[in-house]
Image (cartoon, rainbow, N blue to C red; front, side):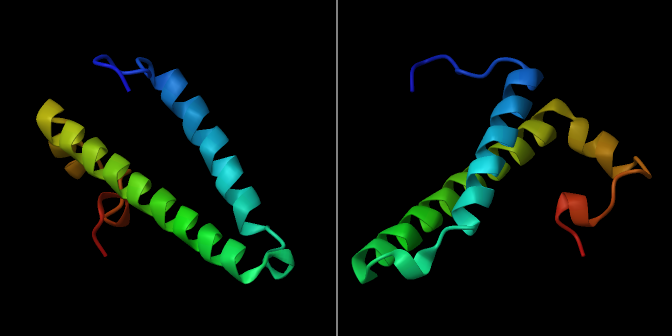
Length: 88
């Protein structure tokens, strides 16, 4: 990664998110029974790494929402549910 972000538009972010989601869905359909024990463990580590990256992305997203003031706007928008913002 360089000094400037590779994604600079909402459209680019949306397209990439859809592509990544598609890939994760394919991983969920993997024929794990065909994997050897070591390969299954490697697959699990890869999934954990994806999980950490997703969490970091969500933290960055929330930070941006808070810094831009959008979080306050969302809190007062009746279309936004509590679960969307992490509530119960």
